[in-house]
Length: 159
Image 1 (spheres, helix red, strand yellow):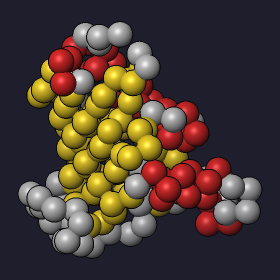
Image 2 (image 1 turned 90 degrees about the vertical axis):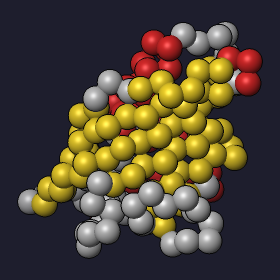
Image 3 (image 1 turned 45 degrees about the vertical axis):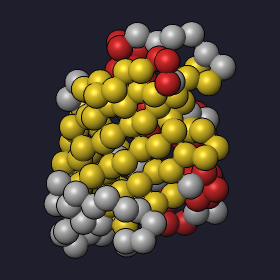
């Protein structure tokens, strides 16, 4: 399968919908085993490995996060956190079927709520995607918070 630009854009929307609906196991299945989810700590940060980040999670850590969110004994998630993504239409920055490389940039507002607390984050997400066995998958995802240098409470879910 060679995706169209619309297929790539639809994938980004579908990923956000999975998170909004709490379908974390389905969301985790979108990831390639070697993928990383990165949320830089500094504006325009270029290195996730030698500079501190808000998070830099590999597949193992993403699985732990999903297990915690879906766990019955995760008392910090009673009641469970909920989220809502409001996306601008993603830009397709790279579309290279020959190299199996598709890159998007999406501006969005992300709302997370639990009990009486709600936080709103302005976010830019960069997806690096590949097609494996006819299915679009996430190779890497970078999420830049507009106010990354602010003090944050816990972000339980994933923008």
